[in-house]
Image (cartoon, rainbow, N blue to C red):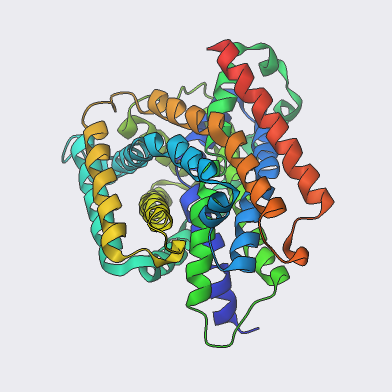
Length: 413
């Protein structure tokens, strides 16, 4: 298969990765390393492993039916689609506000405090919305691929440089299991690790869109479709571990506590690169960090605008892929208006704000994973596209563990 075609097949998976390597990696994984050294690497790995099948089911359904998981929810019953939208809708503007604030913090580090963080975050949101309304999926796919490659190279180089500073014995330190604060942080860490669980829906929409843009007559096999998501997913998990290692190698030995404000934390992250590679490379790495956060903002906006536009099409009696540009633009602008309100009212403490958002995302994750499981086991699909018994057990284990953690979270708060 030609490299260009492989690139198009991998597009949805790479967009998923670009959306993931943002707040979950740059902020939460780095904080995990700073606060607990390598003790939470096992949590990061398990979160990625346990959540994988629920995401992959979105690829499976989209490949088999040419429709998104939203169609599957509707076939389960209106209740399933309504439940999904009710769970996700309140979080959308808050997520947009959080990722734009983190991006604004990096901008402040790069060019100085030219404007307050809320103002910069608002400008970033507006700019990203304009780009998406002009360029659509093609722009999202192309921009993501370039910026993602840039950050991966810089991060791998930095991780290699800090390895000698890491306290490897902390890998088997489980003292955090006796700390309520640590358990609460784990829920926050797992919430966006590697992405919110609801991103399985836009992933299926990106898959459908990518398939529609393949050359005429080209039809990837189910195995190719799964591999085109699996390897970007492995990269996503590996990068999360890298950011944890950076926090563990530079911030933890010095007892550096992550700052709560966006510019302060962004400056600390940039210093990870500076201490490992020197000032020149730190500037390049800071630009890389900005690049990946911009990608996260763009992908995050597209994900939810596309999801709600497709949902409206279903409620109107149409296919999920028949939503119009005005419908897409309408939901984009609606969530933008609410997100701007959040930006100017709730962002004084970025890390606490992120913990609340990511924890809320984790609490609803088991329900969404269950919905995805029901879609690929009960809705109309070719038998060879249905998950194996092992994949069903895998997802069942993930649902069980996430449910147990969610219950623990409510007991501890």
